[in-house]
Image (tube, rainbow, N blue to C red; front, side):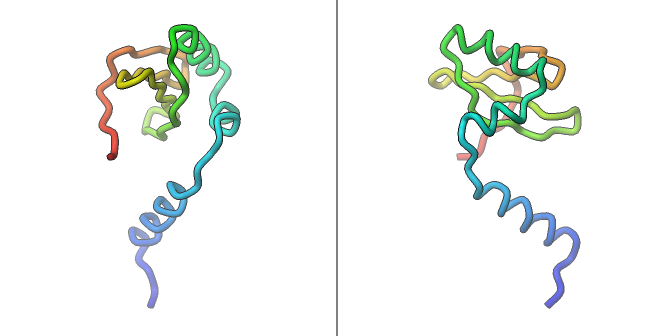
Length: 87
């Protein structure tokens, strides 16, 4: 049985999400500008949760309890992001 391109993409995405990265591996994937933004947020208790790939580039998502913030690839911080998270 041959998979369609869409099915292959979905399978690759599923496999990618099964691989859990540790904190230093997430950190290594940040741009220098993002590292600075995340570092500043860490001073206020935020921790790097994950990086989401978007059409505008990688988006670092940080968390403090139930609060989320994002840092785009240019280092711009959004303390009230409009993001949807999976359960």
